[in-house]
Amino acid sequence: MKFNTAFALTTLAAAANGYELLRDAANGFRIGAATNTIHYNNPNYINAMKAFNYMVAENACKFVSIQYNKGRYNFDDCDNHLKKAQELGMAFRGHALIWHAMAPGWLEREDGNTMKQSIIDHITTVLKHYEGKIDTWDVVNEAIDDGSNGNGWKLRNSFLYQKVPNFIDIAFQTARKVSPKTKLFYNDYNTEGIWAKSESVYQFVADMKRRNIPIDGVGIQYHVGINVQPQFQKINDLIGRYCKLGVEVHITELDVSCDDNCRDWDGGESKQGQVYTNALKACLGNSCCTGFLVWGIGDKDSWRGEENKPLLFNSNYQPKGQYTAILNTLKSTPAACLNGNTSNNNSSSNNNSSSQVQPADGKSVKLNDGWYYIKNTGSGKYLTVKGGVAVAGQNVEIGSTKQKWKLTNNDDNTVTLLSEVGDFMLDIDRGLEENGANIQIYHAYGGDAQRFIIKETGKSKVYVISSKITNGYKVLDVENQATADGSNVCQWENGERSNQTWTFESVDGSSSNNSNNNSSNNNNNSSEEKPAGAACWSIGKGYNCCKSCNVVYKDNDGEWGVENDKWCGISADCATQNASKCVGAQGYPCCQSSCNVISTDSDGKWSVENDDWCLIDSSKC
Image (cartoon, rainbow, N blue to C red; front, top):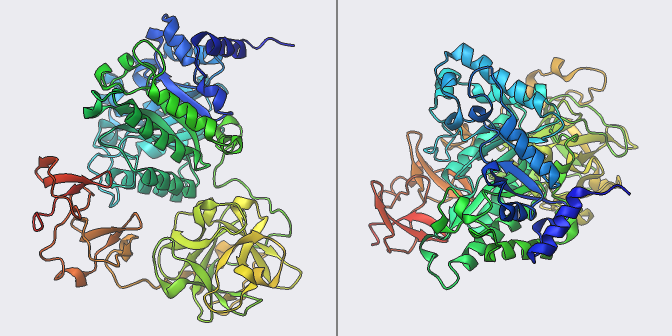
């Protein structure tokens, strides 16, 4: 038997240190830390590193570290990190190819065309050097402006953006071309919940997906503290939304400051531990979250300052309460769940939405692009959005009233189905694969949860609508074989029963079957018809109208609210009602009840409710 050095080292480390290693409880799930070679001569530091199975270099693999002088590449420090990871049996994460804050001065001085070529050359050289050794890279780091408020996004006005406005697209496209099997991530901070900048980054990534820019994942940095942290449900929902986009998520730089709790009986460790476990539980609860890293080993090495005690090990590299909290969370998580969050471990499998789908059974059929009424054969009723209401998460059911769906063919043998109510697609709730997963509408982004395969049945022009996420095994199903208006539609294993079979009635009356022709030649009147949307200014900008008049934010477009954790436009009818009401700021709402002033700035007085900042309503306080 060949002797496994890495296994022996980690086994000895667990025994010598007297504590269980996180990697042993992780069952293959990637849990790691940022390291720095300046500490590699400290045996206590190395022993603490052995607790993890995943590593990222703090600075060694960044642009300025590798190419300080133009055209002279020095991989020594990055190579040494990778070598240590290999010695300890750890996977390695690349960070970061392009970042304005750690770029060499010569790059900043270049003109736009020269800079563009330098970006391409750097990415090409680095990825070729590490081909087959590093399976995941942060391609671009921290490019979204901090002032982005969730209503679209602003790119940071860096020298990169000023001289090469499309540098992000160039970076990702170059990386995919050079290294097709490498997972390509965008990484940023202040993205831990569903609030201003987080929402902007989400919209930015969704836009990249819509434009077919090759992005595979999002890094959520997660630099937080006891006093300023996201609620568990918000980070859980945020990761779930990225899953729906068809991208992976890594929590990449987690540290938790003890803030004003540092003098607690345990130094704030129990409260910090709760923040850590909330992040880990949210990650493990979503199958697309495949990596979890803390930003450093011991407290004295942290950029947050030793006094803030932000990491899992103390300054002597002994595990703290936060470490135990993470360990217990891993140990209490079923192995199947941990194994389900390991898609990154096979770098040869690239989970792009464009990967070809092979239907499980039955022959896939290509219908013409265009608008259709979709009719269930068992009930004679039509696929409809409940109440015709244009809101993300609105239920899909059957009804006597026809509603239109716009079918668009994709290049992976799938289709998307856009509802007539607005910019919402037929969607499998949370991208779940199991029987009974609910069918809804959701913001149109075209991810795997919104891709379907139309397949033949034994009857002419009668089809099943199978889901890509189940590789065609499961189909749209009228729950309990019901036939009444309002009966629910869910996903279920394909049996070609009448409650699972559908016909497509073209709105313009033309034949739907396009098995012999390219659909691009058939995009006539039916594909030009526009969906009907509610009469509200925000619909044209891709956002729903709010049902309430609660204003959260105002800009040049109008007044904004938040419902179901999504931005929505406030109707003009609310203007009179809101004339004397508080309006939030910076993407945060007004406080509902609190008058306790925690902070004051140019926007007003601030408090905290439900673990989030809120603007104090002066009319109430």
